Image (cartoon, rainbow, N blue to C red):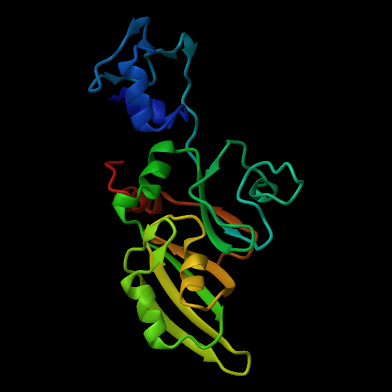
Length: 243
């Protein structure tokens, strides 16, 4: 079965599809000894031999993981400070996978990991509006008029946030806390925490519960599972990719 050369390169874990196209246009990619710069060029992965800078490329098995990140874990594969990383939890995974976006040290919940550069880039691109939902506990009683500011958008140092979907869960008056869910599609650094700071209610606890079609149902803290084919296809659709 034939496929476009840049898709093969992305599937091989070499680079995202866009970066693979740049390599082709730069004359760095050969197929069966011939330099290929035509972006529509197709190959048969079982028969054709592909090289980048004269180094043979072999397709890597694509892996898609859903991980329930605990609090106090760094969203990297190696930490120079010796803290726990997500790699410490990926027992039995031989492929080198990477996180799709980040969760900060004190944030827990849903994290995607994959070696599919094309999908990762598509999910993280802000123009694709891939929804991410968080369960938020903030200090103080946040009234609806304050939550409305999040719904409309607040001004952060790096710009105005897009309108968010906010649903009040409960007030914990005895603890002076407010619990709500917030759904955003942007990926600004520590965005939810900064949005809550902006309305005067700092975050006490933050958990990402959903990305696109995926949630944490049945997945314990610190555990991961492999996504099935239907889930991967749904992610490609959410990222507005052709699969």
